[in-house]
Each structure stands twice: as structure tokens, then as C-alpha cells.
Image (cartoon, rainbow, N blue to C red; front, side):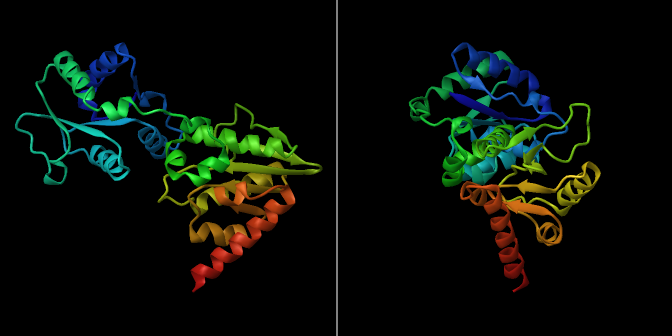
Length: 281
């Protein structure tokens, strides 16, 4: 069982005790310490949360991040366990959720939480025939829940594999380039395209700043153009700027429906024109 623990920094000792207790019984606890400052932190936390079988929310402060993560889990229908100290006021909106009162002793509370999780028998019996990080782009496009749970780096790997399947040569940016604006480059005969993959939460759109950085890299590296791919779409400003530059904006649906580089650019042009027309109305 995969467990996500939503908590504030003051509860690290309890979270460590929970992780040790659950790992002893064979469960996996999400480790957010591997997310670096350069990554899209919100997207990675969101994906990790959505890939969990159960979410534990430790409410020891009015930390907005905890309530956001709890709201995401409840809205997605994920099982949750609320943990709070005696006397702490639990908002009425979540008072009906499974609840555990903490004692203040991390080891004892971790044992109580582990026991409480055994009541979620439907979660323990769940099977994962298609783990989120192992399905392909086409399946992810059809299943928003799987796409939400897929980590951004895994999504980028699948996009890179799509280009490789088209018979294109793939080049990664040099490791010493710190502020790189693209994930990899593809070579199609004499043409070179810089590819940037942005997997964000569904409500977020890729901003015009990302397009600007790509255009700058195209000029500096003397590339033919750039391809920007995001399942969640693009802001109006980003679409407008890309329309006048050699930058193709593609959603996941666009990419999986494409079978060649020529079709990719035709589809991107058609999608951009449609988006501009719709937003002009």
C-alpha cells in the first residue's frame, strides 16, 4: 500500500516514526525529500499524492498546504485518515472523515495510525494492474487519474520515447548547463528541434515565459524550432507568442494522435489557430 502523509515541518518526528512503522509492515511511504528546488515542486507533490492508496493528514496547524492536499485527496475520492491532537478544532467540512486523536508520543501514535490503516481493507485489497508510472501516453490520455498520478520525469521519458519511436535522434542538454530551457533535442534529417515537456496540475497552464525561454534557446543554439508539450494546455499569451514563432504547442491528446513530425507541425498549427479563434470570441 502506498501512503502519502500530509504534514507541517513541526511534525517531522511523527512522520519519520509513521514511515518506519509502515515500512516494517510492507507499506510504502512517499518521500518528498527527493524533490529538488529546480523541479516543478507543485506538480511533483500533486502526482505523488494522487498515486497514493491512502492519504494521512496531520492537522497540527492551519497550514494551507495540508488542507489543499487533503482537499485534493477528498475530491479525487482517495481514502483519507485525519490525525489531530486532543482539543484541536477540526473544521466542520472534514469532521465526517475517519479521525484519529494523537497523544503526542511519536512512536505510540505511529503504532495507532498503523492499526487504524488496517481498517481500510478495501485499500489493501486494491490491485494495480496498470501502475501509473508504467502505462503509455495513449492510456494516460484516456485516464485522467493515471495521468495525475504520473510523475513529471516519467511523463518526459514517455514523450522522449515517442520521438525515438519516430526514428528521430535524441540529444540531451549538456549536464553542466544549469539554466536550460528545454529537456532534450530531436534531429529530423537536417532539422533540430528543442523539446520542453511541462507536466503540471490540470488547472495550471504553461506561461508565456516558458515560450520566451525556448525562443531564446532556439536562437542561441541555432535550432530549427521548438516543441512545447503539456497535458494541461497553455495561457493565451503563450499561444499568441508561439503563433508568430517556430514553436509548436501540443497537448497530450495532440501528441498521441500524431504519427509523424510533419503531422505534428500541421496539428500544432491547427490547434494554435483554433485556440486563438476561441479566445478572440
